[in-house]
Image 1 (cartoon, rainbow, N blue to C red):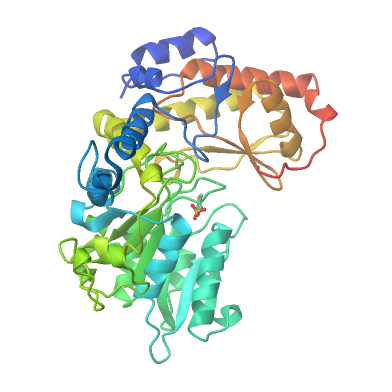
Image 2 (image 1 turned 135 degrees about the horizontal axis):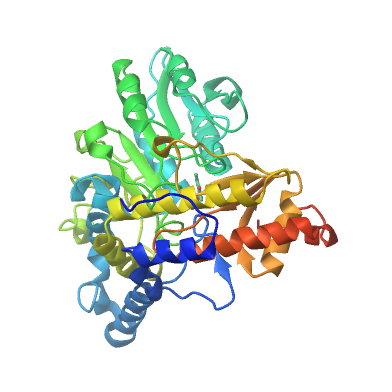
Length: 428
Ligand SMILES: *Cc1c(COP(=O)(O)O)cnc(C)c1O
């Protein structure tokens, strides 16, 4: 860890950049001149290596046609497994426990269809009121498929302050009518990390299965899913993992569940040597591969190969170390430069509880975001009052963070935001 004693000067930002051992990765990404990208937690940027592996797969199609499935640069038939293997270290799992398939929401459907087994009076699903809406929609529809009313059977742990969840409150809600728990690893608004190890232990003490949505943590923080005994997890690869818009998702199933029949079966869940026997009885793969459904979206898998090579080289521990420091630096600058302007830092301060982005609250947040965009800075907005800013370890510099805060200061003191409406855009 490099020495850090905050100073507000641009010289200090530049000295942090000089000491940054990940700084060379920045040149691997397509960054626009005169623009500062602070939205890598929503859609990560394109790297040259991701572009390269995508173009190689396109070339395989051009050259090989159908033979691209087994030949060429990255044989398509094994790509989901190969990417599972490459993803395993960043989620703390063994290679057979991870597969790259489907999408976040589809994978949640698959995992609930496979692991939600209501029995007797144990019929409810436990989630939380701050989670991402798509997860709630999926859980509600899975309950309906089983003939239960989501109003009574989907329990949502309440937040005490609208920002955070208390692990104690979640544990108190693990009652004996709960069959399954699905929670985020990191809350998408406040950036709070839940204590996955503790929650998993407590769930298992009560005989409840637990799974996590890793969209906002995978690629930003290390995980130990296997060691913690997490039953399953799923995540997207287009946020911190830079796999491109609509990139195929990730799915982890603990090895103790290998052999569980997939709830939503399809021929790509087959043992790979059996798949082309074309039998009407499925022989599922004996690993996480069993939870695949149909033919993978190869061109949305291919960029992830190049991107995960970068993660392997950089190392997730180093990424976390820089992420913590650059986010700390952003908070220190905000507190130093933006006092008495109505901003509240709405993410946890403790290193163990904060994820990879800063959640800056302001009642004029929607139009401050528009003003930032006009100034060449890309943030994102979460209604009603959150500006999310994500300095990303692999491609954001400390000097950029310094500039972002200087720009925010100018927007506020010059009231530049007043020329915009305080409403969100169609895509925020
Ligand atoms: C981004 C995100 C999703 C998106 O799901 P998709 O199926 O990829 O559209 C779901 N959950 C969380 C927590 C997210 O951050």
